[in-house]
Image (tube, rainbow, N blue to C red):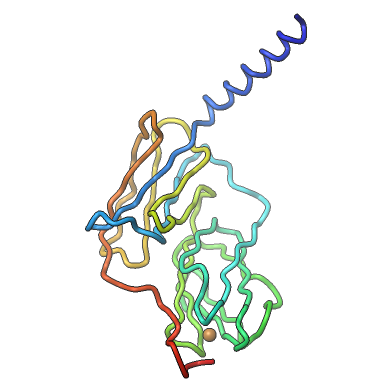
Length: 210
Ligand SMILES: [Cu+2]
């Protein structure tokens, strides 16, 4: 009997912590024609969310003469490594005010990752291959995800109640105001974002830049 009551105590504690921390939420982003929108950043802003103190390292690679992934979202203070997985050398740079840097012509793994301290948008380019393009969204919150091909993200746990959201896409027609929403019991939300008609950069097929 003693064992059972102890077990019940543990179960109650687990439920209590879920109730205060909130549950998961899944979000779908659609464009103006109701097609799923990939590469949209969702940031959930909340004073309840503790910021991480240990810096994390994300990766933006160069593969088959393009940046992979096209859009990356990180919390300010974190780092990004830029591994070159091509045989040719790349020269990665940004002129963006959120972070200006360059990694001069290199192969393989650069000496050190780059730290991003200021929130904002960083546009990446390559000095050798003009068509190469990628974006880094530097957010204030650790609750940051980028939509997949189905236009979806899944946050395993968000603060309970009202949520403050930012949504951003590199081709958005205009910046969306911060959204304040309350998920229903199903924990699902859908947003629409108008984007310009554009295609992701891809490497020219032959005889260029290799
Ligand atoms: Cu390049």
